[in-house]
Length: 528
Image (tube, rainbow, N blue to C red; front, side, top):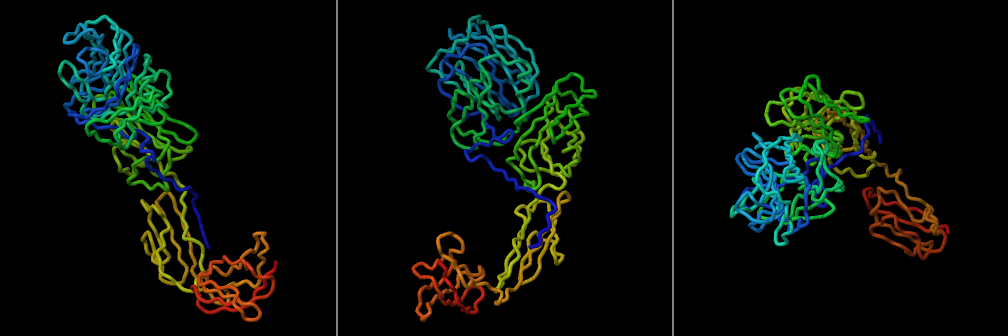
């Protein structure tokens, strides 16, 4: 076989986790219809006290309301806490368990929001006491106004109540979440501003201090929502919410920059090989985030997984206005990459070839590289000697996306129909990587076929079997002793006879059939 490799690579592949979890990047989320979809977590937080922190990524449908979480639902008393969004405010509120219908039995804070519908935003609420609460939008404290009059502590001791995601009932009215939710997290402590900012664009391990609830919504099917905190407060999916790919800007790792002045500011991700620089920021975003995903994407339309390489990156400009943009430069191992593929976020299945320097990107982008000379495994197989030729197709690449082919006859198809003996070669080229291979298929001469004249079945596993040329496997084998008596025969011989039951000595054989039909005769010696 003649093989000329210009590149070497282990073929990469990607898939959703076998367990029904899409843990790649943002993974999955749940879309709630605002009518009857919610998650019932059961009676789990009867002992909950302040302080606490709750956060989530949400994508509210235009005009929809958003009940994100209620810790104690069922009774008409104000108790436990709930976190929700109305058209102009995000609200965190607790009840003291002493009554209902009036604000005297509840206490909370409402923070102003505007234009957060139809886009992914990150919301965080912290409650430390009746007059000590904070609300954050995309990591920025939005202030707000205290509501309610209770000065009593939060009361959660109501065993008949259940915690619910996307649902809250109060004073005879039911409020459902309408939109998409991802990465709901609850702590029994007050997170700092820096913790909120550093964690919002990356997955948690589930072992973070004080984490008492962590629903990442990454199940791809089923009626159970898994809690990855140490509590394992799994929930029952109610109604018919949809499991969808999440567009939240989530990675395995992330870095962030907050500033009020973007003049000459840039955010740079640099490790041993990858260098991603984000700069020339326009508009007035609150922050820039670069997040890194250490796997290949779970949706890869337009990518050739033989040539692109993990990790891939995302850039997110957190802003409530739609006028923010930035530039991105990407190099690998201090050199320009050959080709960049981009998409806006994880909800988009198709990737588009792009220049390695991106200019005036609007708010969001995810990017994956194809390096110069990315490894590529090609193999037409070993050279062959055949007695009988059988036509077949040569298919050297399992994934031909973005590759151009040239065969020995000038044809350019990705596969080639072999119709006779000869020499076949091809070259595959995608502008970044080139590979070639050659296959020689020749007509076997009968005299070149090998049938041994001795074997040694003595139990040492060396030369233990009578092994004929592989090209005539499947032939009919008959063995005779010196007096012409048949001592062994097989109509479909597969190199599996060890002379069992025969003494050492000289015997004779005939072999007929297989691809090379001429009958062959000869003597063979068994040595023990």
